[in-house]
Length: 154
Image (tube, rainbow, N blue to C red; front, side, top):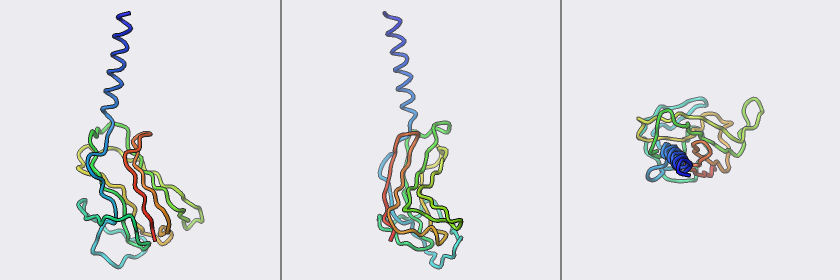
């Protein structure tokens, strides 16, 4: 009976060690519009910004080229070889130049232990991307939802 208990304790110990490797959101999640001084966006144009860019808190997003919106958060427990993040963007239905509808965008992102903060954002750079309606952003590690935010694009 004793060897069975030892094995069970070892398995439980290993399982709890795996759980400790999971990342978690540490502190508040900032969300809204990433502010910029740039005003005259052209289709396909992106403006490089700094990581400390100010976020105006809101879930109401203007439907216009150049608008960048999303979340900035801090993750604790990041390890380079841990399960990557999945950034899931649920859209009201983008219809690309090829005529195909896209209701979701999925991005797999490796963990960057050296990064102080992480960002999930979308920037309207093409006219077909500017789609009014509800946009739902979700950050997963494996099947665990770490954070989410809904935006109303108008």
